[in-house]
Image (cartoon, rainbow, N blue to C red):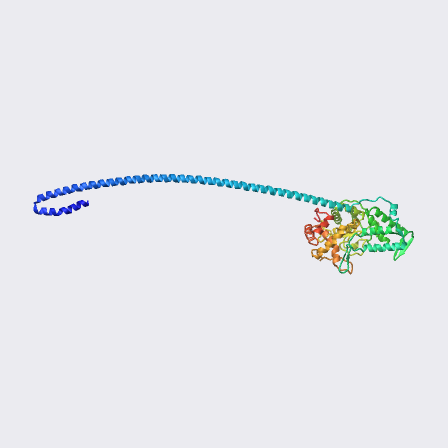
Length: 530
């Protein structure tokens, strides 16, 4: 196109010149020829241009087609590569996952194995521990049973000597004959000295004494030893101080001593000897409750039933009677049967750990005289102002207890139980003195002092003391055993002297006392005052 335009520009002056020298026809024809020639030239150029365009278009289209095919091929290859990569990645991921799972499974198995081994080891150790504990418990039980058996043997009659008065005489055959009066003066001094032994007693700052020890056994041993050394020879009657002794009195005493020796202090013989030596030497026989002043009650097994009292002469006041655990329980008509039944229940329970206790109590004629008001209402203790009760010693007629203070159905009383309390004292004075229970005497006052000094045992209570006496450490120490055992027996919160009111508390705060209590008294629960 550009070439045609340039050609026309060059041709235009000639046309102008031509027009000036020829006529119009020629000019027109020439113009037409030029135009035709130009048109042909233009057409030719246009054809060439179209051809070029077509070729360019074809080339472009071909190139585009090739590019598109290459693109499609590249996309396909890319897709294939991507699929391969994804497949490879998926495979790798799967393999890694499987590998991880296998590793985790292996770790889990190892962990489970380790845990299983640990559990097996723990179970084995637990079993071994349980077996060791069971073995220890068995050994402890066997030891406790052996200890219980050992304790029970102390209360049983053993090696009873089968002898007679001649053999007893031969026991003293080497004794030295001395003046009869000197013999009894010496015997009297020995008796008083023996009762003054303070080996296990407690003396307060004020000089008051809480007596403790196997005095009856000590007296018996002293009497045997003295009779082996000396004899009074023959005499009719001797007097010294306000004491008068006949030959018959001496022979009666000697028979009692031999009888006790033959029975090794059992079968009630020690009590009879202690009563007799007291009477012979007028030792502590001035109070109305001494056993020498009263006939004993017969022991009748009544079971849990109150019967009419078989009262001996002088004790007709007592109209109600029941027995249990080796103890006689009596009262006048004013006391309801429930009080006697509750007393019997307590005695039976307290003696259930060591049944041998019951025979010793029965042989020693232990009796509980139940009253209302004060003990002075009883015939043996006129004028006595004791409101709760008191214990029985080896040479006493009975122990006493206030019926109104006995917790029982219909009489729910808090604050203590005089049957339990006084029977604890009585077992000490009668039974422990007979069997020479040194184990108890060596420990109890030390335990008491320790508790009182630490402020565990409450000393804020009051006692019915003799005129002119005031409470001090001797009274607290003397009452500690009976009060704590009383709390242990009742086993009711705040019934008496906390923290010694419950068994589990006693075991925790005073384990040595707990062991001493359970040496003699039951651990099995009972329905006290339900």
